[in-house]
Length: 274
Image (tube, rainbow, N blue to C red; front, top):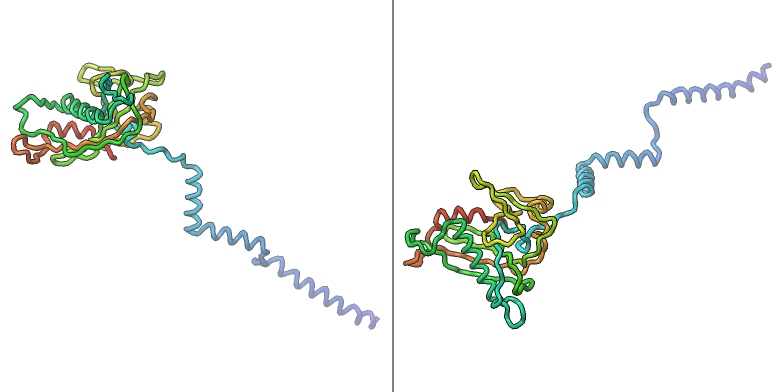
C-alpha cells in the first residue's frame, strides 16, 4: 500500500497542477492575438484616421458623381443672350463660292447696331440724343467654317466687358439650321399682351434668350441648356466668332465720355462671363 501511495502522489499532484492552470484561463479578459486578428485590428484603426476617411470619402464621391459636362464657350449658341437672323446675299460670295472674310465684319456691325437701335433706343439721326457716339477701337475675327449664299445666317451677341466709356462685344456667326421636330416656341410677356416667337424661325427682330453664362441669372446646367435652347440651336456649326470694341466719345472733341445711361442699361442685359 505504501508503494502504491508513493507512486500515485506525483500523478495526483500533476492533475491538480493542470486543473489549477485551466481554472484562471477561463476567466481571462485578454487573449494572444493571431496574425489575422492583428491585420484586421490595424485596418480598423487606419480606417479611422482623418487621411483614410478623406481618401475613402473622395473615392466614394468620385464613384457617385456624374461625368463632367462640356463647358459652354463662345462657339456655342448657348453663350449668347441675343440673336437675329440675316439673309446672306448673292454678292456676299467670292470667286471661291463662299462668303468673303470681309463681310463678316459687316455682320458684326449689323447685329450690334440692330441691338442698340431696337433695344436701347439709339437713334443715330436724332441730334437731340446727346453728343456721345460709339466708335470702333478694335475688332477681330476667327473663322471655323464657311457660309455662302443662299444660307440664312444666325448672328448672336454678348457683352464680355463693360467699362465706364467702352464695351467689348462677343459675336458668334452661325449657319441657320432647319427647324427640327424638337424645337419649341418661346413666349414673352409685354404688359397685357403675350407675344409668341418661334426660336427657329427667321426674323429680322432680335430675340433674347437666357445665356448659360449670364451674370444676371444663375448658370445653367447641361440639362437646363437643353430645355432653354431647342435642338436646332445646340448644333455646333459655328462659322466664325469675333470681338468688337466700342468706345463712346464726344462727337465734337472725340474724347471718351461715359456710356449713356439708357444704352448701358441695355448692354447690361447682354453681359456674360467669358
